[in-house]
Each structure stands twice: as C-alpha cells, then as structure tokens.
Length: 139
Image 1 (cartoon, rainbow, N blue to C red):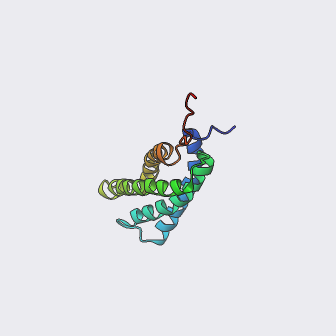
Image 2: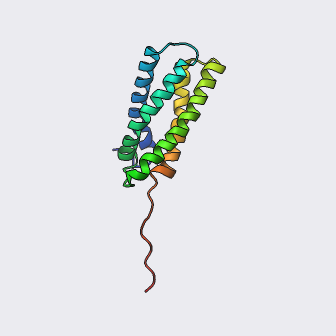
C-alpha cells in the first residue's frame, strides 16, 4: 500500500525516480564536460535545472495529487527549484572545490539535504491546498 499523498514517505518514493533522472543527467554531463575544477559543479547546476522541470510533474501528480492551478504550481515550484539550485550548487562547489570532498559522495549528501528542504517548500508553498470557499454565515 502506498503512503498517503503529501507525506514525506510518499515524497521520498517519488524523489527516488526524480533522483535517478537527476543523477543520470549529471553523470552524462560529467562524462561530456571536462572533469576538473568547477565542471562537475556546472554539471550539477544543469542537471538540477533539467531535473526540476521533470520533478514538478511527478510531485504534482504522485506526491501531492495537487488540484492547484498550474498557473500557480509551475512558477512557484520553479522559483523554489531555482533557490534550491543556487543553494545546492553553492554547497556543492564549497564541498567539492573548497573542502575537496569526493564529488560523487558529496553529490549524495548534498542531494539529501536539499531534497528535504525542497519537500518543505513544495508542501508548504507550491502544492499546499487552499480553501477557496468562504464559510456560510448564520442566516
């Protein structure tokens, strides 16, 4: 039985699909681009952006089963992904270039941290269901 929509467990299950897409894109870009200095970070940023477009739809449908208008969810999730992309890319650069951590091991650590922060943003902002019905007065 699948966990209830909107739960962190459901998010993690959906995120595993998104993570595989993101990781595959990143590995392809790491293979194609030079493997020195900042290029793995460039690969991270490009894969994050492309993966974010795909992730919007999987989280909208599978994680949150959201009925919010896509005129709200697409721009809002993209803003969250852009902020997450800037933050995660900065952390990735600092961890791999400044501190010299293994770029694949740090990929996993950084993805986990920013994935959790992304869940909070999506649950509380982008896909949060809002009540659009005004309560009836005592008439």
